[in-house]
Length: 245
Image 1 (cartoon, rainbow, N blue to C red):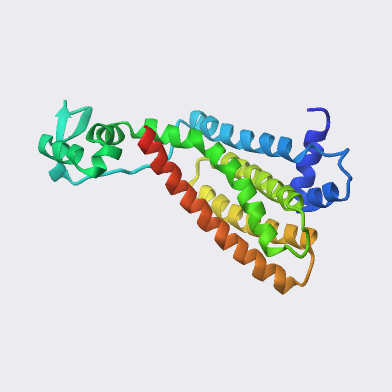
Image 2: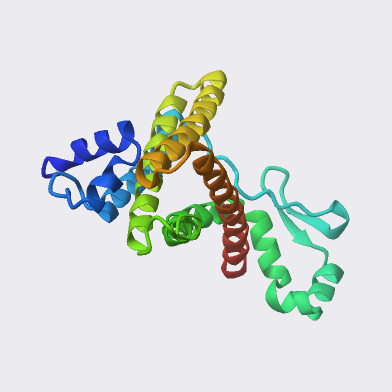
């Protein structure tokens, strides 16, 4: 908060790729260091989500929706709060199986009955996952544009700045969601996707240069691969969280 924060955020949001260009050219005195900018943007977003839920009194959107057939379950408890338990014979067969060594019946029942706690654990791990994906995106950029920058660092700068913009755009989407209108929320989601695609391609053009068609082809390929890695990471995160829950 030494006067650089607002200026750096304004440059990040209004001039795609310019921060990366300035850092590569040695013009760094005016701007926040990339990792500090990333931390500010990511923390602001991850704090804004529970804050918005608290202000609007909305329940968090469920991440996990684990269900099992009723034939495998037996209800336990009163009619108000009913726990779901595996039938004794089903639990015994599961614990005796190879799957039961990794996912015993007691853990499955905990997942079924404590979904909010599981969702909270997954959300708590999300910032770590995103931080791990930073160098992955930079590596994809290095493969696609290895003829532009031989060093890995320029691609990492670009990755950090694009992710920082993503978090700030998500923050704005959360703010719009406070209006409480479903149409506004849907419109904000659409605007976010369009803005992110526009920002990424504009930043690629500014930082990497080259013909427009090449930027479109390489940028689309990197985007598809990274989105696939992101989805796989989400699934892996959910599985790991369940295994240690």
